[in-house]
Length: 116
Length: 112
Image (cartoon, rainbow over all chains, first blue to last red):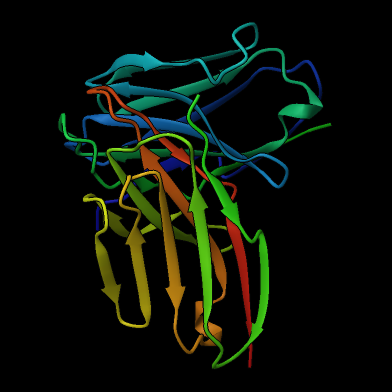
């Protein structure tokens, strides 16, 4: 049963610490998205990749967030230094998308981050 | 910047009632999707609508895409407690490298 795997599921850290979240997309999917979900803002798009190339990261605070895809089986989202306002659930999603924008995204279970 | 506005944000109804959730934008989208999210899980796709004016049915759920491809609605007939959850509309941008953006979501509670 193919699924998107995210680690860690839960992370509690102190302000100023580095946080790295990892995502293993579904094998064969060429597109990976990172979203952040809070009660106030809903699901915000942070960054996305197609065929491992970053297409848009305009939703990320550039000074502290970075997203990479070192290979087709791994996407990472790093926050350094973390701040309390970064507390949220971070979702990774992958999809087998072509040039026609109608495809389905498959979401992981999310990484719940709490920054104290 | 493309934005999707959903209404209402919260809905609490009795089992058996009908309801409609709206998703509106000033932008044109290639397609609109509806996802449902349960607590502690990621969103799961319910339907994709592509053509302006398109109507799709999924059992008691009816989805409609506006003629101008800027808005969509989700109608649930005879809601059941199992319909409880967070409903999210999402739109695909029109460029070749378009991104999927989400509305704020509608939290639905169906009481037995």
